[in-house]
Length: 121
Length: 106
Image 1 (spheres, chains in turn cyan, brown):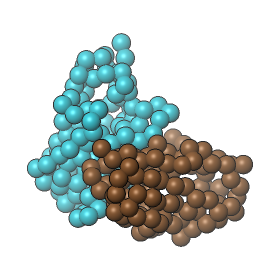
Image 2 (cartoon, one colour):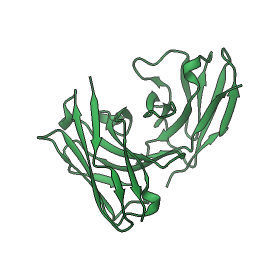
Image 3 (cartoon, helix red, strand yellow):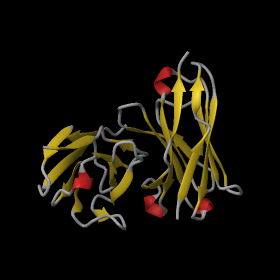
């Protein structure tokens, strides 16, 4: 059974930093692209970042480009999101999401339960 | 950037109804479109990928169609579990989600 468990969320002041982690199990982690998607309270889904299976390539949504960094440790089946220069508008539930394979890389077939990040003074 | 626009934003329907949700892309995305269902307080769930391919385990009352810039998600006979919010997602060029369609009980 695929399981994705996020951790690291919490309350942080504007301008601060936070690192999210996602522990994956139930599939061969190193074979799949992975993603972060967020959802602000009462709002829709927003793509944050994606990383290829090897970690060699990544991309970001416009609103986080230059502030967030996605990475992965395939030896530990873990995905990360390093967030810096945080703004109140970054307040959201952050979901760790598994991608598919080949032309399904950007199809999000399994989602974690999410971790809440609150940016406030 | 590719923009995705869903309509309607809210849809009221009854058990057993056939409903259709539309998603329009600001430019050609071929068939690189997925649909997700999100129940309140839960993570989204994949329903359809490549515009019309049903994800394993998803009931056959869900279907998707379209290509290019216009797509639809159809639920043939609404069941109680189907009252949720639905999102389309393009993956032709990175990733963009539609703003969502909330399906409510009439």
